[in-house]
Structures are given as structure tokens and as C-alpha cells.
Image (cartoon, rainbow, N blue to C red; front, top):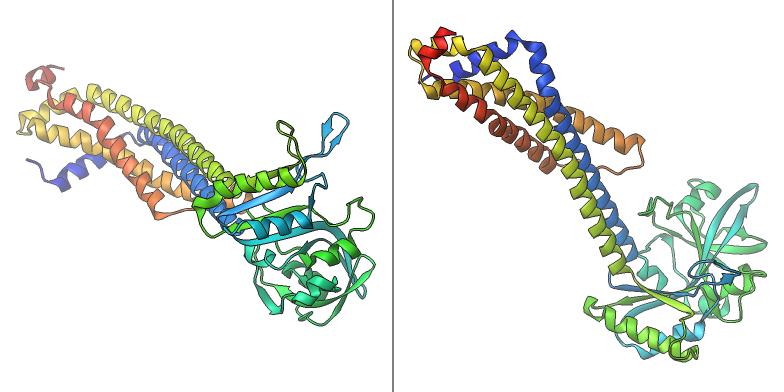
Length: 410
């Protein structure tokens, strides 16, 4: 039996004898492996973005919004109707002990001015649990106290992006900033969160007490007294989500005097289910992309089998000579199998390099998140080896079964 080193050197010599054909044959494997790495990396990166989104939203959470306002035949979307009030928020918090945190909020846009600097941003008028529910921490300063919430104090907490635009590297705590036409005192700065799951800058925000936003920043919005735009609820246990969602809906229908069969003027969303649905969708899309890439790899493997069969036909006399000088069927099979493996491994190595580069370029210059991992690279290597073994075995077996006398006659 031929030693492994001799088998490999013989296979290398055979491939070098027709190097252009070998490169073109390996091209299918190169494209397939590169596609597998890029597709799986994008799928994994998207999954990580969804996990980050889930973390920022908070687990075990319900979001209550006002209904959709109709302007003629066109709906203005969920939350466009002022149907929720502070009374609804207080009733939900008081009557449902399963709720661990509850926060009501208002939102709007305003121009912030400090000296000669100004910056357009969004503001949130919130109650105390808003910070915990949304995972916000302070980098400096302090949160609002009970008197600030009750007295509509003209105090504000800035996000990091707003601080950088208006104050640079200076700590703004204690400084004055004008929001719209109203002067506010900065009492804190939020810790940076960075880019959100949908690509928005989470740090481009200003937070004020709920009553402050309602009385001093809403302006002529047409909002009724005591109105809020959304109510966020955080539960201690995930198993209570469906029960609490039903109780909230029943309570709001009773408070809003909605008759049986009539449409709700609010919506309650289970954010955990929403993100879980997106996660499942992403997983299915990753499987689809992986399947498409796998098809490319199969096509490359078929190309290897085709060329190896052609090679067997072209080298019948060589095979006969080898058998005549003592090579057995096993030696012939190992030689051709080694050639197929070298083609797939060489193509796999180039495909891995191209796939890693493509994933990095997609992350740097594209909008698709890609996350490279050792698992994906090892999987691609396994695919390359499996392709060589699977598609190279039949030509190698066919070569080993040739009759030496018939082979020498050719």
C-alpha cells in the first residue's frame, strides 16, 4: 500500500499537470464556501441585533398605546389618538399586582439652545419607572425626585449625543438649556446606549418629568387634560404576560365605556412575543440563505465529480500501468480521492478567505449586520471536506475497478 505522503505528492503532481482546469473546477467550491460563510454570518449578526433589541426593550413587557386616529379613509397609525390618560395609568398600576414597574410617557420634538449652540432632538416626558423599564442609567447627576414629578419642575436629563452637541466634553449638570422657549436646568446625563435595534441613535434624547412635558412643551397639540401617549408595563414573571394583557384590555374597555363588539380605542402589545416572532422570522431567513449557499456548494461538488470522471477516462492507460507495477485498487482509489479532496480543500481555503472578507465588508460598508464566528468557519471547513469525500468517491471507485489488461490496451 502506498504511504500517505506519496499519495498526496502524486495527487498534487496530477493537479499541477492541468492547473487551469483544476482552478476552474475548484471555483464552484470557492463560491459555495464563501456564500455559506457570508450568509450564515449575516444571519447570526441579525440574530445578535435582535437580541440587543430585546435587551433594550426589556423582557416581560407590555406596551399600551392609544388607538389609531382616522382622517377620512386614512388611518394615522397606532398611538395617533389621544385615548389614554393618567387615570388609566394609575388604575392599571393600582389594580394589577402582577405589574412590577409601570410608566406613562409623552413624546415630542424641540430645538435645544445653549448660548450660540442649538440642536434639534426629541424629548420624553416620563414617570419615575421609565428609567428602569428602558434600562437607562445615569453617567452623572441624579434622577428627578417626587417633587419634580408632582410640581412639573423645569429640570431635564440629557442623552450623551445631546450633551456632546451642546456642551462638548464639559459636564452639563447644573447648566441651563432652553427647550423650545422654556429654560430648563440640567440635573443629569444618561449613560450612553449607542445605536438601537432599528438603527436609531438612542442617545439623542432629552428626558423631563411627565407633567413638565405636558404643561410646558406640548404647546397646542390638541391633547386633552391628563392625556398620555403610551403606558409601559414591566412584569416580574413571563408566565403572567397573557393574563395581565387580558386584564389590562378588560380594564381599559370598562374605563373607556366601550360596548361589547365595539372596536378598542387602544392597543396592547406584548413586546416579548413581537421580538420572538421576529427572531423566528430571522432564523427561517437564515436557513433559507444557508440553503441557497448550500446549493452553490453542491453545484461545485458536481463540478468536481464531473472533472474527476473526465480525468479517470483520460488516464485509463496510466491507471493500467500503475496496477501492472503493483498498485492495488485501494491505492488507485486513494489517489483519486486525494485529488478530489485537494481540489475541495484548496477551494475551501480560498472560499473561507473570500467569505470572511465579504462578511467584514458587509459590516463595514453595508447595512447588513454580519457576525463572524469560529463555528461558521469550522462548519465551512467541514462542508469543504464533505464535498471532496462525497463527490470524489464515485470517480475514485470507478478508477479502482478498472481491469488492468483492458486499461493497458487503451
